[in-house]
Amino acid sequence: MRELPTSARPVGVLCILAAFCAVSLTVRQTRVLAAQSPSPQARPVHAAGMRSFEIVPLEKVSETSSNASIGDLNGDGHPDIVLVKGRHWQVTTLTFFGDGAGHFKPGPPLPSNAVKSYSGSLADMTKSGHLDIVLSNDSPDPKLILLNDGRGNFKVGGSYGDPKWPTRNAAVGDLNGDGYPDIVVANRMTTSYFCLNDGKLHFDCRPLQNSPSAATVAVADLHKTGANDIIYACRDSCQSLVYGNDGKGGFSRAEPWGPPNSSTRAMAVADFDGDGHLDIAACHEQLGCFVYLNDGKGRFDRGTKFAELPAVPYSMIAADLNRDLKPEIIVGYVNAPGVIYFNDGTGKKYQPLPFGDGAGAIYGMAAGDLDGDGWPDVVVARSDAPSFLMFNRPPK
Image (cartoon, rainbow, N blue to C red; front, side, top):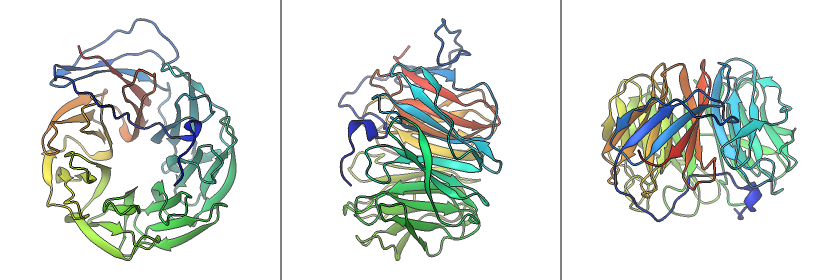
């Protein structure tokens, strides 16, 4: 895929060649809005680590928020936020425009109105140079592409798949090498699909074989062939799979990963052990959280358990929060604090640190530098509790 102009790149986690000695990590919870700047009243929680984090509410209401994405929506060079809402209920997804210093104001209303959205991936779907929003919506709502005019104003540009699909999350990436982002759709209790984009928002959707139920999927080049593979996490007591790309967008070859009869919706893909190959992390319900290391040929080991489950796991992302080039694992739980698992560099041992007040369910997260200080911050989308920002600060 061609390099996007700066204004059209999603804001990812910074990867800077610097290492720092572990001292302490403090999570500070504050009760001020991001657009305000009074002196916060902090309640510190200490653990071994390298950074401190300041929690600031993104919204005042408690709705069924389901996910978040970060990227420059209005072309001003600053990261903005898409806060996805809905799940099983029709709620309106929101955008927030950032000023580059960590302050956010509401963006214009989205044309999708109230739908049952689970994710809102950002990608330039038509090579316009602007980030569009790919909404994955539960039935009976259509799965929508919202086209960006470059100033953060969106219109419905098309749809993909079948409105009857019980869709959960969707992942976006170029699967057939034509330079246009395609979509992988995770459907609950039925077959999942991958949908090839012709560049004009017409989608050829094809089933993933042996994919009985999913809530989470990912797109990444696990075999280092230059072609993106599909990582499928089984949601309801079945086998998770990696679908290898034949280089032309075909996925007839599948290899298992993880336990044969597990239930998984929290998954992330990153190079956790620093060997140059992408690995898989996942929390399986009733089993625990594991890292599966890639042998360099797209095959995965039996897994190393790095955590027991304090509650039901709903979401996971990977981000290098302390800039040591070894990504951390951040897990969102139900009615319990989230946990940052700090990587010791081996990819097998992690130091846990809880964050948040434990209200609601952390349904989705995104990481990126929201305030321009060079350190990745985190957006936390919560269902039945206000969503919040977690700013990365110097160690205390």
